[in-house]
Amino acid sequence: MKVYIQTDIEGVAGFCFREDRKNPNYEAIRHRHRMYKLLTAEVNAAVRAAFDSGADEVVVNDSHGSGYNILFEELDPRCRIIHGRNCSGPHWMPLLDSSFDAMLLIGMHAMGATPKAIIPHSKWEINHGEFYLSEGTMACAIAGDFGVPAVMMSGDDRISAEFLEKIPQIETAVVKEALSPYQACSMIPAAACELIYQKAKAGLARRKEIAPYKIQGPVTLGLFDSDSHAPPLELIHERVTADTVNEAFLKCEKTMPWSFFDSEDLEPGFTYPERI
Image (tube, rainbow, N blue to C red; front, side, top):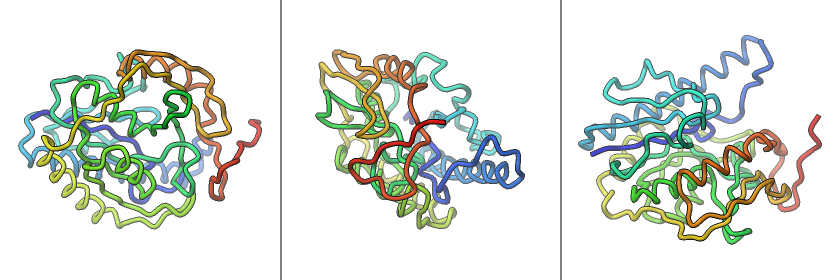
């Protein structure tokens, strides 16, 4: 059995906000590395669950920001990890193909403009607003195009709700309750890791019962952050695939105000402040 583990950091237990990378202050640097350790531990729990479930090969994709967030020297040595500048390779989820039997998603966050979610950003518009996808459910759609089922995810309660709406049979590890974009009530990391381990094992045991998440075409893709920010680009494709998503992502990503969201609830009508 081959398992692909897609990762992000905002959905990790203990994560509430990003550090200020422009601040050389010791606390800012320490905060960043604390988050790396929390992420690494949760990924390790998923890796261990995969091998304990009979996996022969596990590939981890370090998919947040710089692609250098997971302390891979601390990972289970049986896995391999994709790291480095995101989207500089063949597509957003390198090496993913139909040879994989299942995908696990760790540290997922809600789409842009989701009320009360932790750092909600990235919002894929499908067919001019027919429905929307977060980064996590878009990853599931890419995997689904290869026939690979997404069997387990972890994150806050807001992103878990979206996954269950689109993939009702997926196993969800809700490791924190989101209270605002910058505040949550989290499980203690050790407990979160144990929950992730158990949910990953359960998902892998049921992998043949969980259908791959497929989006049939033709589709129009748009990427933006909130209902008030118009998509800067629309691309029409026969279906959602790794290549078509990567094309849209590369052309849209640098125009996105990823870090702008209010400290209060993101209610309908929310608009971003002007960039300085």
